[in-house]
Length: 288
Length: 317
Image (cartoon, rainbow over all chains, first blue to last red; front, top):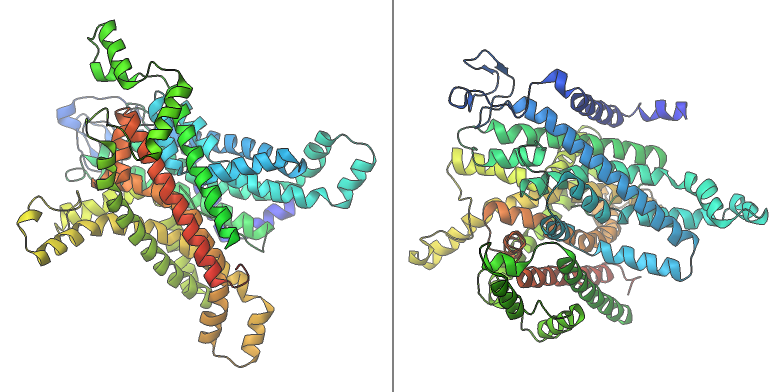
């Protein structure tokens, strides 16, 4: 595994992606050290709409300027990273959990269970995801927890299909047949023998799905249906900059650039892992 | 054609499933549209009367059956929030969405295929540069790209309008002026949606071309002495297009989803904007109908993609 990892990082895309993602995660984790209070407002008249690299009359330096309430954009960006990355990671974990469970069950128990689960997967895949997200996010009171659940429950289908295909192919391999012959119970074969061998495409899909989940969280928050202000998330930061595009374009630009950088990083890393372990390729259809 | 009929039936099943799911979710959710409509100061009797008027006091299966049969007959009810017939609202909205989504689909696939082909045919620096460009486009959130384009082209350069499908003065323009006005309003939303789509398509086409390029029949085509151009376009591209056309069907739900954000940003008078406004107002009849219309458009798009695949690949027919 060590050698494998070293070979993976011979790929420039893997290095760039990993460095960018790690940087974002570290910045989010160390937010209290890197930036001041993201919600604090001092003297609004004196401190609002300061451009990047300005020092306000109270003596505080603002790397990325301030917004219309005089709040520091850098601080809001770094604290927003906690929400955006956290929501994205948890949502992807939930999709992986559901997707692996559904795909594994459908691939291993091929009778009516498989048919029903695959039917469910195809049905969910045919839904316009954002329409569903909008509906759910507006029916229940918007919150980070709701966004995680909704994103997780609408993002598992690709993973389920990949796992289903892997499990079907693995189930007829000799090592599985010998486990069956030894009398190992079905669920144990599935969990201990088949699934560990089926995880590589899941990792790729999860990396690509992470970018997608972060984009969608931002989208929902942008429409006011996700994380609620004053808690900063990259989506509601972009939304708050929308009204000040003319006199303070940096308010909307900074979180967007951060968003694109993180999604590019996740995509590059996913691409590199896929090419490393599955040179035959197989792209991921559709998104958002 | 038998397979096509089966797909059509399962597509119909998807639409019915979507409608049923929406109905269940709407009724499960907290929040009472009757309460929203009469306001916080209403008495209990007023709320009960409003609930009765909306049919919300009947048992759920009865509400569902009544709604489904009315919907199938084309009676989509009245919007709770605006009081207008839902059918009129959607009849006015869907052509705008189809125009925007259809045009951006065509443009993003044409551009994406072109970029992907160039990348697959020319390895090296150009491929790397284009890869960086496409992965960035792929990562761009449409609503943010839209805002950035508005900032540059509307506020800084003052070239293009950023809101609506036509100017307020459109009625006073001549025929040519009206067309120009509509095109100017279409430019920014269409550019946003297309740019976001190009990245994903180009990435996929490049991958599909490289998968095909190693196949034995490509070596044979080269051995026959065909020009590189002919090998790329006639042999590799044609075979690489099959998964691309399948992707086209699969990417329709995604494109509609993207259009929801773009319509909200640019105040484009389509189904997405109607949906967002209805969702925010808990306007049940409009949400249900808009969802059913989007699901139907997606299913129709998938069927269209299957027809295209069978045209491109004789083995499927």
